[in-house]
Length: 558
Image 1: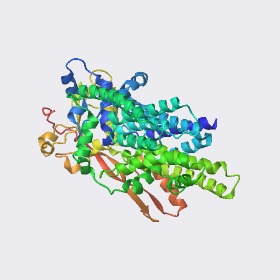
Image 2 (image 1 turned 45 degrees about the horizontal axis):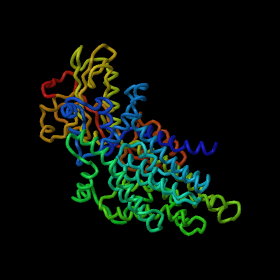
Image 3 (image 1 turned 90 degrees about the vertical axis):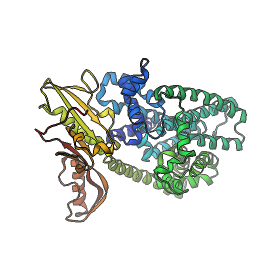
Image 4 (image 1 turned 90 degrees about the horizontal axis):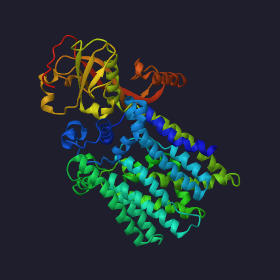
């Protein structure tokens, strides 16, 4: 029963993180928008180019490099039965939930393989350590290309877990081939950097004479051929020109060096900053992994787990642009190494005082890390003002009983600025039709509304008063940027840093009803601390503007 409860912890936490932070950032937008378009418009087989250009978001906002549609198609197909039963209103949550379920399955598969080799207690500690790390659980349902790759790399790396039990050579070979296949698919289709992880893993196996060059070459050729055929066929069709997206991305970012445009970090940044954040619990880095490297009973498997991962991080550190998601693939094996040490200590707690003290430290570290995860998740929920803004405006439109322009067909135009679109707005959040086209809405009073969502970034248009005259509403970071006469309908608050309040200070929340829970938490905490408080500072991020009643609009521009 305990193992069942622990195993359910990972998918349960993924869903909790999804519901607490239901909106997304711009980095996730390609796959999410693509899934939306495939679900709503399907894959055309007639007038293909015209239909794609007319309906698909990636032709309006292609991004710096082409991305693959393989993941988006998979989510769109799998989500269809759920959407049929549930309706379109929760489509974004369903799509993200499916990706989160896949990554949860991959983590649990890894845990089961680890437990099979090194005992049930090791598997339990793996779950506890993963569950009290923030990034893997938080990102598990986020439609980044890296998180499509993450599930595949995790399934692959479980096949390379060092085997303590003797196994037939044929079984080992099958596992190795499966591992290579998953890594090749992840690298060829989703993220090119996975090829470095594959190389580091195979190099370590070759050095130990645990795999033959023949197995490597034949499996690589077969796997790469299948993966390349899939991505080239699917993506050339949807981009409407011959393309292998990951090759194009690798050339743009690595060969041409354009990734540096998004910032650079020191060569040791992954080791000193990002890995500690990913693993979160400091006892993993300063205690469990170093101990495991030297303990005679577990040092061989621990080294087998960490060396390929650290080699990958070291090689990838040569790339100047660094992000957490680029090395998230190494979290399962590094956590597995820590779980081996934790199990070793826990199983000897009753035999030795040092191990008993170590076990107490382990329990407290899990509790403290869990508290840290709750705090980080709470703060992260304030990082999506764009999603909050469009959701609030949609509710206002749906609940309004008066016509904006007409008693019959009401055209409602909404402009959304770049910041709003980068912090949560997706096509899934647009008002979905009761019937008719994707822009129509049947409402209670019998009127039909034609809602237009505009994401114009053209500076020339943004400085023309006539252009602004077409809109009923605007979601905008700075109200003065909207030309003409506007009323502020609502203000969306968001995370603006950490505030330290002394006794008598008011703070950033004031009496905003949207954050009543946080307001109550702060109130109780300040009673306990005699007026002191350290917590998230909230500030205005997006303004919902409405054209004043009676003002004239230009309807010819849209």
